[in-house]
Length: 314
Ligand code: 8YV
Image 1: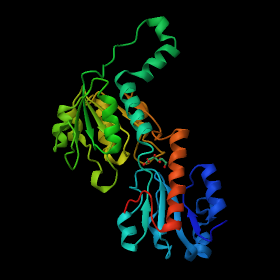
Image 2 (image 1 turned 90 degrees about the horizontal axis):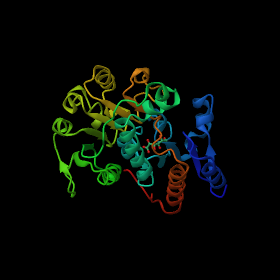
Image 3 (image 1 turned 90 degrees about the vertical axis):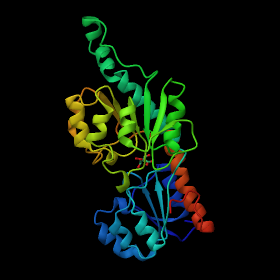
Image 4 (image 1 turned 45 degrees about the vertical axis):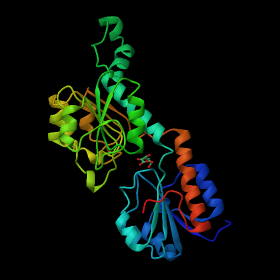
């Protein structure tokens, strides 16, 4: 390696970018170690930087075991699986990979919205199984045009979703901590937004502040003709309440990219015909994952060159 810097790999990024990191720095593959404590014992003092991914995050007790850790570069925009307050208190800087995934995540949100309202999976099965030729047309579906889209969290991704939904003929409303300088209808009350909306789109950060925010009351307000689409974090929705609402017809359906306890999704969803499921893959394109990995590499490069991050969280 060119640099003497020691980096702990908690979760790897793309192979090509791992090769690039290995050529530049001394990498320690904690992710591959069988006995993680024994592995750490020999190297803990030397680690100044750490690489992980949004899905895996960084265990809090691991941070405590690294006395000289200065920087965490995380692959992904969400950082709910890293204790940012603890990092800040220790003077550890954290970076994420915002913006480069906005388009693919927003496209996925629209894909799930349309797949849910138009019953894509049921239709695919209808054609594939021969029911079409045996029984004729499948049941009618629901149009997106003219419907109200209530966006929970109008950040960078939420705005990218809104800008796609407007030309589809949807009316936009949103809920969030602050009103934004946009023309969309703002509601400071989530229940009221759910009551107004035909489709509730979840695109806010995960973590303690939004945990179980979409609860039974919100789902009831959304109503039996309403749909939920979630491309944010599973934790934002009270999942047992959602499964019950889907089963009992409290809402019409859901399009979900994220779940509690990933990848061990609650099998209850698999029994619901009115959901479209995607395995947390909204940013999962070659192009976007390459761009995210490049941001991790660039953040480390910038950190070691100047002590500055290009996309810092704290
Ligand atoms: C992750 C994500 O990058 O960006 C996020 O916050 O959830 C995804 O894009 C992916 O799950 C890899 O950890």
